[in-house]
Length: 103
Image 1 (cartoon, rainbow, N blue to C red):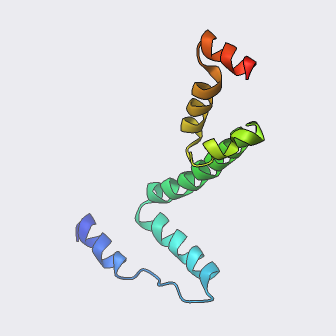
Image 2 (tube, rainbow, N blue to C red):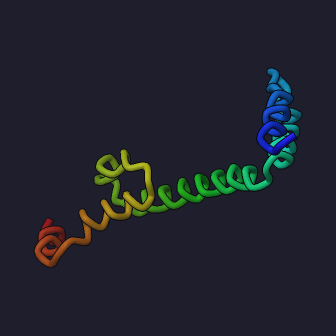
């Protein structure tokens, strides 16, 4: 049996989630994914960590924005894009900085 057919046979034995049994399912699905390809589980774990850090970065940036500008930036969900938008609005060139000071 080659590797691809082994995955097909193993895939047919995936433990199905039942209401009220999430913890048991999570433990079994984690073991199953690690069994077929440990790197795949690493992708899942890293993705969760990346999302957590993204939310933390965005939240931190939003806390530093003056209240009157929050609505303008609230729709930007990506921290890197948010920082670029903040820089574009508040950084700018010398003429923009002078205008911001005068406002």
